[in-house]
View (cartoon, one colour):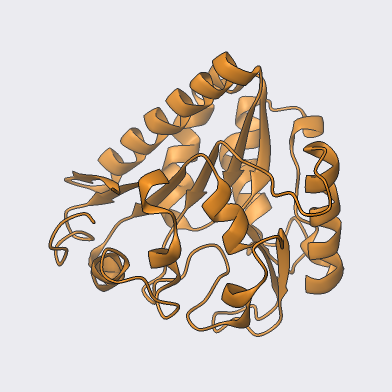
Length: 241
């Protein structure tokens, strides 16, 4: 069952999210000696990243990955990497050797291929293996998309063994993106989905309803999903499922 926490405001969501991520990373390091965290862009997780950076020592031994990226240069204002670098990576002093950036500037096809190669090499994966990330931080769009997996898109039908996919027709600009596959999101030990604001209420209600390719967030593994939202984003839900 999905674990769902409702908070009064966005600041409370960020504080809960930061505490959850750091707790899960500490647990991963205790069990396996290392932790793997994947980040998303967007305004909702930004404050959580800033709070996590304030506890930089809690990120020791953590490797940073990305759930998706726009096909822009890394210093472009639209870059998810740039957001993470400014709010978390640089303030926390995370060494570049532990940061695995999606090379959006290579374009969707080559960028996805390069990232898949990096995942396979770092996790020593066999040809059909899938990496198991400890925590993937996700936002949710008003249309129910997560990462750059959009409603009804061909990426949702990709083979479960696909790790990283190029997107050339995103309904949100820019159209070219790179995203982790649904298979990687579903394989993670935990996904943390954050939502704030009334504009996300319909998407949250749909996500908690029947599973559908029209609502990509509904396809996440619910027994491994934690949702933290504010009262406005949760105003239409009937309860976790």
